[in-house]
Image (cartoon, rainbow, N blue to C red; front, side, top):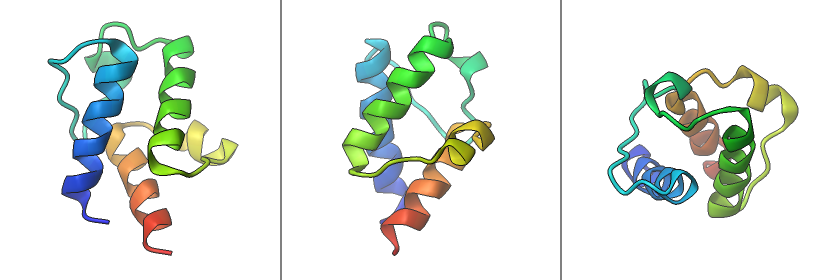
Length: 81
């Protein structure tokens, strides 16, 4: 799956989870960049992303993700298998 498509779909997930149509994520986006991104919303975001892409992150992947780019990389790797 192309990274462009992954980011388009991630933008939709983020907009839904945070109820903000103005959100545009990129590879460097972190929780510090989105006002309401706290630990509870992080869980909601992970679940919504898993549903969108039909996959499950393992605990190691979730704890290792430092930005949206790392999330997109995992999604890309899974989609290529």
